[in-house]
Length: 113
Image 1: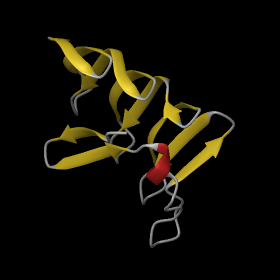
Image 2 (image 1 turned 90 degrees about the vertical axis):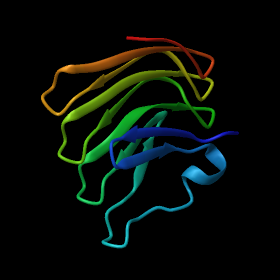
Image 3 (image 1 turned 30 degrees about the vertical axis):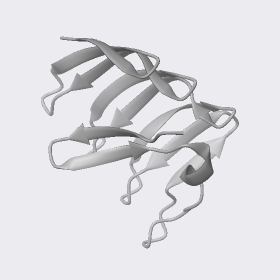
Image 4 (image 1 turned 180 degrees about the vertical axis):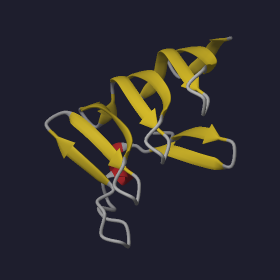
């Protein structure tokens, strides 16, 4: 399965497939990297703040996922189907204003505004 990347200026965030995403459990400072409770997966930054959260079903990101900046500020809200971007993806700038919106179908960009 192909990994997917999210870019925010100088930082790149990566979503992982099931085979490699749950291997590393803690940062070097002892902070947990992720937590899977039921079908909800939460990623954390080294500082303990939430990086991303959403449904993780049958080893795939599904449904609505919310991504945050390290400050805790909302960054991206997007949807997955079968582990691929699908539907609306909305990205916010650091002033909480809409930066852009994209629409995907089966992992492929179909519209950006």
